[in-house]
Length: 500
Image (cartoon, rainbow, N blue to C red; front, side):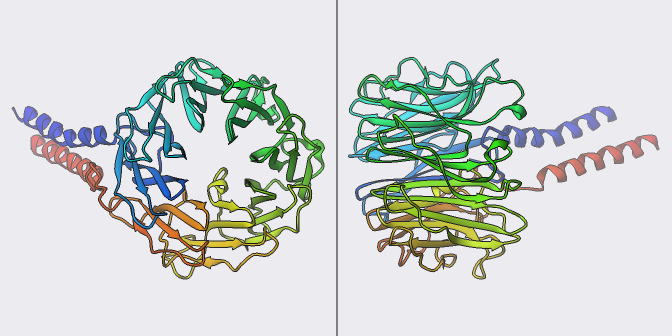
């Protein structure tokens, strides 16, 4: 009888742990370190501003949230749950144009599931989600949406189950996203990943990285490949062009000019002689590319360029990169051209050097830069005397003359309380919008938003988009340790008592 009581006590102590485990589930691909809002996406269409983000409940559940403004970000309608935890997943890709809003994301369900959703009334309402065939792909991510007339394309990448290489895919719809046909493989270049697309009119320009078909990736050379897609002509693709070895490649298009920039590394290609930032352009829509030029070179032994952004607007081209050399200090740098990339001015230091600041991670700078003609704007995190500690301040800097000169860096920490990575900036005309996560809340990160109506001269105080969000998982961080200690104590107590 006493042993039965002991077993019941142990079982009753374990039940809460099982319940907590069920609520937390298990880590999913793309799970953040803490709960709350993460990785906002900003899209604009005339006076409309759309912000999408995931709110995580621990590491097992997430919902896709959405906010809309029709007055340039001054007021918002309030958060809407666009998708619940059974079907939400990755950070979404969003395209908004002429009153249509298209959204796509990956649900990590093993195998993964790709969803598409659209609004034809400026985000006032959305149709039901459409599941797009992925042929049993895993470790997937969605990257871009192409739209022209009734034709909708989704570019994504993933690994087919039981295969060791990744591929870049295109899912096509000819009825405005109501149904999608068979998936097309865009990359025939072996192990391929990280696609990028820029659409101009009904033509899309696509770039991706590939290790090819060699065995043992540590012995493989990373190359970049390029193609175009004619969206209206049944998504016809051009022949694939190799642009050589580049890391963190970036793509930009202005008119018929196609620009590609990236980091050359002696680790990737010992024959290049110097590491640095390389730039290559095409003046005929990507049919032929000119010989690459290095905008800046480093000594052959240094390979400290791990993030880069490329932006173009009219005749202006901007290359921004992060140099994380631990010896000379972290630096945020930029070079600009005002003649379609034919020549570039002197390298500009946006921030640094700093010997202790750990700056941007790969593929983050492209969300931190916004350009419009001769206007260049950038936000970043750095040390501040206004915030709560090291690395928690948000800074803003801009140029109004095509990058020839830069205004002073402005510490926005008192107005924009972003304290975690994953922030974004967007612009429309003279309006600037900033959104990002702040961890200063009991239930985890909240997404905060600020807008500037005057090109960055002044910003509004942060608006908390997640102020009404409540975690379904109880906020008891010490529950499991306390329960375990309690169970061990009960077992020890009864063992001693029974022996007596």
